[in-house]
Amino acid sequence: MEPRLSKAGRRRAHLAALAAAVFGFAASLGATAAVDRCQQCYTDLLLPCQANTPNATPSCWVQYRACLTANRCQIVIEP
Image (tube, rainbow, N blue to C red; front, top):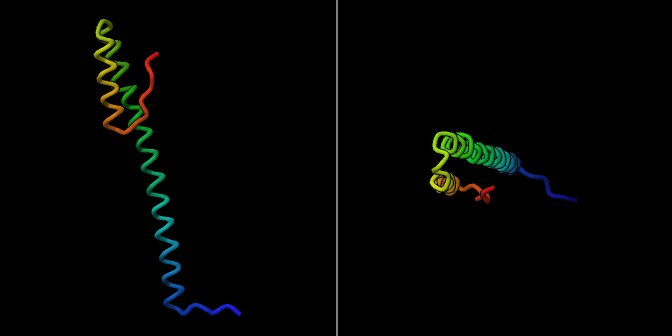
């Protein structure tokens, strides 16, 4: 026969489950935000840089890599 949890024990178990759920939700939001920032490096920095300064492509890639690094994004190889 399993021992039954007291009222305080059940409350702790519920709070632990709630804390785990909140942590998981926060972690998923953080991951989504990171992906958006990585995409922003491309759309807000690299594309306009290359469009406005076609002869400065190496400089654009340096800036793009710096943005990716700052946002902890995966560094992609230039096409």
